[in-house]
Length: 91
Image (cartoon, rainbow, N blue to C red; front, side, top):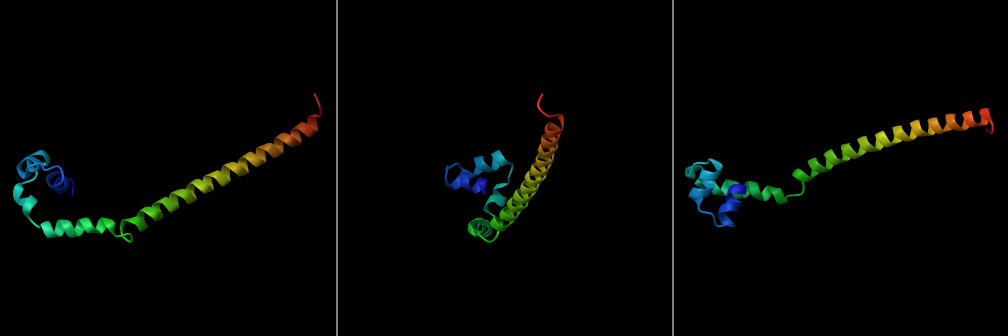
């Protein structure tokens, strides 16, 4: 898609685009309908978005679990700190 964009939008000649990216010009012209159909899939919300959302959801769950664990450790340490202060009394 980047090669196609470079040719269509940036108006770079096909020969230059193909040489720059190491693609044969015949490959560039082969199957333009397929490239446009696959490019349209980017705009369908059900394809890539659900995978990305699922990955982000797992990452959020993981981070929330780490925060809960840290909060539990912190609460335990603070409890021990308060108990120690009560045991030692005022200094």
